[in-house]
Image (cartoon, rainbow, N blue to C red; front, side, top):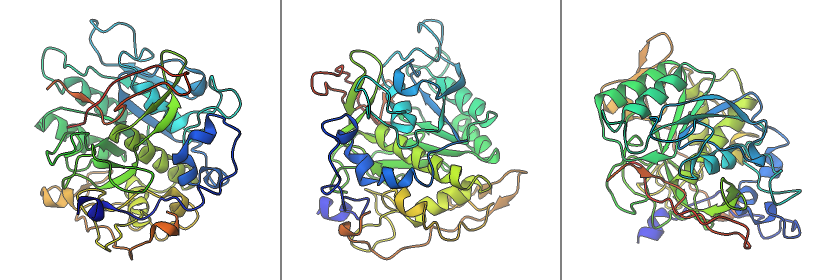
Length: 385
């Protein structure tokens, strides 16, 4: 019943089997890019002009991200060596590469690509174990820093922080600055709400597999707003031979952020609310025709639909998810105007054939394993609170 409920529509796999082989290149193994029709997307947008703040464990210097990393900041304490360009958990680098990898890594031509290969990454390194004052202090500081920076999108593939007033305030501040915030819902495979994904104003991202079904580890509850591929995701990474395969809602969050970057690059005058509304309205819906469910949210993100046929982006100052209104907050738009928030427009059900403790490090590198003998094993699992 669970798999039937979460079974989805479409990214999805139409055309994947028919995609011409890339002769065993790393790129040919990136099924998620084929499913999302990346080669077609890149004829419209590659993410140029959009910066994504990767709030994580640092972004290392790897070939796939050469020329892609904008100045960032280190919020971790001195007890963690290095700065924001040192990845102390081999996690943030992969998130950056899933978003903006340039395909010039150790795999040679057609190595691992990101979904938005011309986007910029801003590394904001936080302390997963807190800084001795409170567990969420460095995350709060990083969100506020990103809110005041050039970054349009905040990617938080982490979790385990509490639902605090300081964290909610930071999220609200970022929204008033016109930012779009994505965070993984967690890898518990349970119903517990994790933070910051559960905070109103944060877009909670679940993970689906190649069949468009919510993965067993992807947390399911009312914090799930949208979903993206989160199984067998190949990317550049730090350590070893520099290529990893991973799974989890971390990876899904990075792909949701990259999808937003593609759309925002194509429509630079749109607001965060309009970008999110289009992503929600064009998402592949549950096959049972429901508007949303707790496994995939309002559907699987489909930039291949959003880019060529975005539809009406709607009002610029209305947050398209109902959680802010439900929390009695409304939409904090630039200038401080508060606007009621309606739910996203429902779409007709789509068939899959239509195409379409300590803080948990998340949501993502559920596991990073060797690719053809060429990747470091990195086990960084768990989920975001």
